[in-house]
Image (cartoon, rainbow, N blue to C red; front, side, top):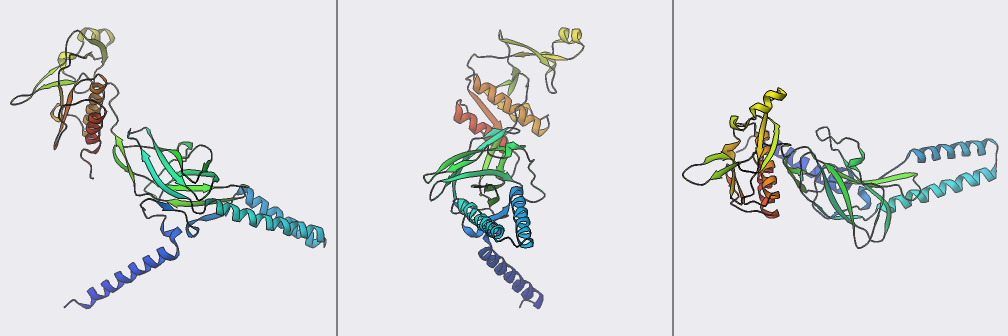
Length: 344
């Protein structure tokens, strides 16, 4: 039979779970701040926050001065004007709140980008009727996730949400390769008067693919020939591209010794070939490099081979793309490089 401590822990755990479910039901706006949600996400009234803006605070302070002055001088017209403006402020508060009510986030999509570039996330929002003055921005969650407060994290200007749906592009900075979970999204508005700001948070349970950053000036690629093993030789021929700064891993036979002596710095010769041969990019070619450097170099080779219209193949531990070319084959290879060595 289980001891008393085990029974107590089980009861406590079940009570905590019940309390969490109750909290989520009563205060969905608070519980949704750190909970990922599947689409569609509905901005119902219990998850909308609203506070006065700086202009709204100044407006309220002015009303207080008007009220004090009217009471001090016993001015009925001043009191009537003050209470009329207060009623108008309440109407504007309700209008700002209703402008965000029942907006739905129904879809999103983003094309893969390379690490360090800005991904363009297209968000599709709908509303029961047209809603003007809607803005979006990415918002950090907790201390671990940080986003610099730059204009790049926010959609430019305000948008009108239509009943049939509005597609809004929202830039998202990327820093590293692999699958990137989307940060928290803030949908907010100050329409119609700018005295109040209403907002709702959404954490869509979606992610985007980020390709590795290609090496800026990679060395000439290596051509693999199938057989019992791999015989590696550098591409040579009449297509001489010029020289470039020596990079770690360049073979000594590619070093332009005369030119290096003239400028007192190592440079390597660079060739390319458009002869149509099938090229194999294998992990054994770059395994002497640091992992991220190796992935960056293979990424650059894949992109250059694809741009040249060559048939190429990518071999990684546990992955073989086979020979191919074109946009689909390129994405297949870059996706394997983006997720290599990372947890799914």
